Amino acid sequence: MKLELGNYEELARIGIHQFWSGRSSALSVSEPGAQGGERQGVLSGKNLDGFLALIEELVRNNGLPEAIVHSSSRPNLTLPGFYRPTKLWDVLILQDDKLVAAIELKSQVGPSFGNNFNNRTEEAIGTAHDLWTAIRENVLGDQPRPFLGWLILVEDCQKSRTPVRERSPHFPVFPEFQGSSYLQRYDILCQKMMREQLYTQASVLASPREAIETGAFEDMSKSTSLKSFVAGLAAHVAAWATVNA
Image 1 (tube, rainbow, N blue to C red):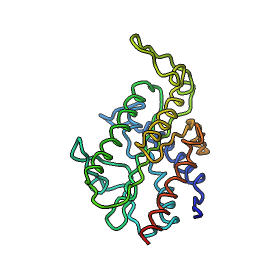
Image 2: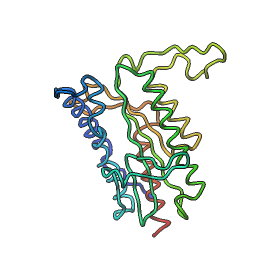
Image 3: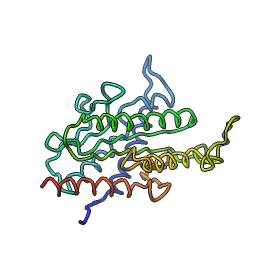
């Protein structure tokens, strides 16, 4: 089965350009009562919308041209949970009222990486565990296992590349975390979430603020690369289309 990955790198660069452009525009807005600084940029809309064209192209070109790709309407982005009633996802793909894929698109920029990394980690793990438990309890009914994807764009800068020391006075930290940077920790997180089958594919992209001009980004490892993400989604869609033909 030949997968159609299309011009995924070009679409990703367009998405990253839009991400940095959107943040720059949000930070330049000065309105009475508005929250300024970096937080204003974070709060300004769904700032990874540029990746939606990439996801939709993969779905259309790999056997599901009639699938519904939800990405904007909040009610249509809701899935039931097990530990909570519902959870809003960033992208849902449905075919014949069955869940083909659920995807989270996240980002993190400096200057504060520590607490935000912990928050993103807890959110990612909890979201996946909640949905898989609900699926185990048959919340989706009789259907194949969906694709769960998690992709994060992290600012590539000195602070995200600098090794961080951890203090654990009672028990040792796992060796892979010792002296790791925040970008490396995101890579480790993605690898472990896939190994534990929380996500079908989890990926981290590193991009500097200067990418507002070029859309440049860098992968942290092969298994967590953008190519692995798009290939994994394309393969899942193609298999779904073949089985349900």
